View 1: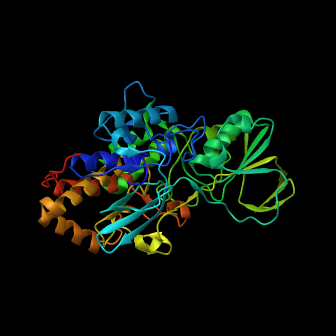
View 2: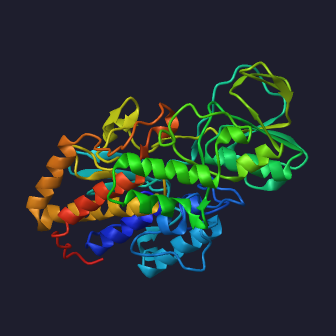
View 3: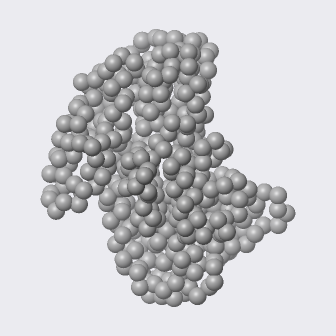
Length: 433
């Protein structure tokens, strides 16, 4: 296992429960990955809260405490992950301060793993990659030079970085909108550059987390079109249309992009604390020139432009790529190989951790089934070979890099649950762990 963040932890827990001998290699001195604020592996900032509620974020087998916020802070998220590791005795199976430099297949049934500081490679029967996909900044190519300060959102950590500055945030995803709100509160002035208009979803609908409300509606036995109408009306009632606040009108259906879970940005735009601009055309000294030819001076530009999907320690050809992206069944399972997996390589429209937990249940059962239940192993092997991506989208997403890993939470979860149920007859291995 490479990585001991949220995805690596639940895979480790499930493999151990099925008697699979395994351990995780983690480059940091402690677990948590992106949620270990201040570490090199972390992209969160001081005031970060989850954009999925605690109910929709927690692993199904380990609920978050009632005392946690409805939308937990990064401190609560890390506390929860540490509690999970203690509950299932995972610490003793994690090798900290261990950096993987390279992994390569040896024949069809083994892998060599080159670890920093070790002269000889380690050999493993299989590898599970859980290195996350929010750590390698994606920066746009913008003509001209900016004479002020620039940074990627990954470098933004504290509100003090904004004080006394005229701040422009480029990018209107969830991170960009959150940082624009921070700038509205702490900076001299704040602005956001939006390539297109987006639908905004409030965190709460009548006091309930909006993703909990949405999940409940999705479970009702009524036509899909009715469910979408109910969701649209609920959001319109709770927040209203973006253009009413001075935001651009969305050019797509509410379900065609990754949701923007934020009611504060419309509030601050409506109060004149955040200016809204279109896409950036070029830089010109301290000035930024926008697509509508407006110009304005700024001191600090923050690129909230997302992240690359990066696997620097493995030849991408090992991951069955298509157009530079791993093409895996359900974004996790190699269609032809049974000893290489990627955990957490998804972008759901609600909490990710319980989805990765379901991925982990399938991985554990499939690995065990290869010894204890060849019939089920053969069934799943044929399924992942013949199903391609197997992505249960309920709608088409806007063509954008941010939707490369997008999955519909409800449909994806139900697909994984059905596979887990089909594999529940698999018995754990007898190996000690």
